Length: 306
Image (cartoon, rainbow, N blue to C red; front, side):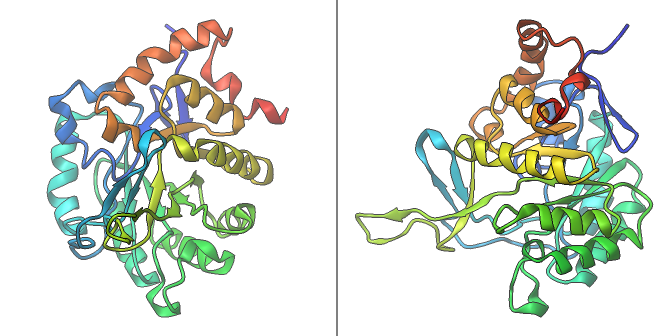
């Protein structure tokens, strides 16, 4: 029987295009108590660094009404050894679809070390490389804001891995297509975009920033039009599969993101508002497709570019 929702990323089959985004779904197994997570297309697990990180000081979350939220969690995670030895094997016991390992670092060596560990880990299908981290050897400028730096990370990670590498792009740039093309030329297998947009909230009673870190990543419905625009720009300038993300909160958003050029779609902040969001979106997709006379989800990928 034909699966109308099936898609694929670098030859890896997904039952549907819906993926919980890194940082909004923990390491996945926690959510198995809520529903059968095997319904998901894949899971992008919490961002992992070579060493454990305790994250930024509190407060590190700021709500933005119905439009989203700011976070400055600071990549809190137990480190790659714990993730490889414990988290991924435990997730594999309750989840039998592709696992996407999200890695971060503050130097090229960090990325190489984390990528090599994930490449050697059974159960990891794709490695998602977050290049929004500050390069400590270059004055703190994020790797993802400079084409040359983005290419260096991509090339270094590709040299030590055999699994598909998807580079997660930062939207905090003048021209995201330059970064995307640099990653493509350096050997990336795919791209994921967008990451959060830098934002700020002020407590007007205290006359102080809400976040202890002052600035944080803005995510949620408010950034969705920006994400759609950037996905479309990159789809028109590159020949790589794209995982689209940024403000997706309903089945219609998944359709729109795929029409812009995404092959699969990650759901982020909406998981924090509604833990059942991904499940509900998957259930709603066939109904929305019927209403829009879409027979197969793959038929609409980048259709606005035709």
